Image (cartoon, rainbow, N blue to C red):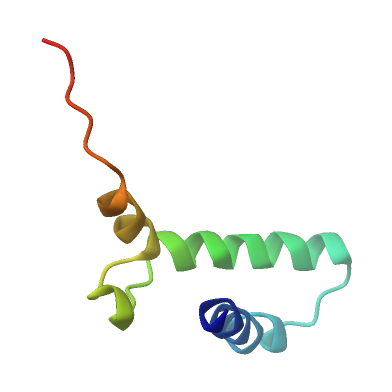
Amino acid sequence: MFFVERLWKSVKYERVYLHAYDSVNEARKSIMQYLDWYNRSRPHSKLGKKTPGEAYVMMLPTVEQAA
């Protein structure tokens, strides 16, 4: 639960409060761009300086490929 609360705090302070959106669609697009950046490019100290995307991939089971 703490992670979700921290995520939304980051979204609000780093994106929402810094922009004056003219429409819900504009806000949605901006927030989705932020979340994409957050997951793919922003390293996190709790994840050993990995991005959430990198941490997720490392948690996936390794599947051996057929020769």
